Amino acid sequence: MLAADGVLTPVSIVTALLLATAGVILEALLLRGLLDLGHEIGLPLGRMAVMGVLLVFVAALLLLELPIAAGLLAMGRRLEVRLRIAFLKKIPRLGDRYFHSRLNSDMASRSHQIHRIRLLPDLGGRLLRSTFELLLTAAGVIWLDPGAAPLAIAAAVLAVGLPMAVQPLLAERDMRLENHAGALRSPGEITPNSTDFAGQISIRQVIQAGKESAHGPATGRREVGRRRQR
Image (spheres, rainbow, N blue to C red):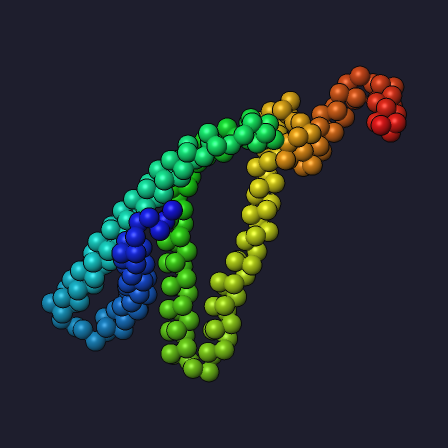
């Protein structure tokens, strides 16, 4: 769906993100250099000129951030609209069997949270910005100390690769949390035909245990005996 925006818009945003990241690193270097220039530039006029150049540079970085933010927000809105259109086109093609296999609360929750898809381009932009900062920082460390190149490269690879390796596990945990949260919102909707039945059976056992404790130990023992016979 993001490909519908064409090539020019993503390439422009990626280029602007690279320039903005390089500008932030250059800004840090300039601020560090001001500490040394303060002792060398004695005239007030020279100091004012240096501060003026620095302010112009910071203003340029700020103006660069505005089109980046606007472009990412526009991509997010278009992505959400395309997803909603595709979703509405797909619903009439689905059979009743699919809807009986899902919890009503789970489908309602996913429908209400579909607006969060508009944050995907912004999330991708922050990922690219962090990656560019990491790569440029590693390149700067290698330039300043070539002997530390293996350590800098290993640190950069671990900083990028480790979160990507753990992401599938975190996504699975998040999906299980969403399924359990949907079951807790409406425990009466749990059915054996539900695709989340295996994960939701524990919730039913908790509810049943609460009922048994409310009716006394004798009733609980009878219920346990019935389940064993089954």
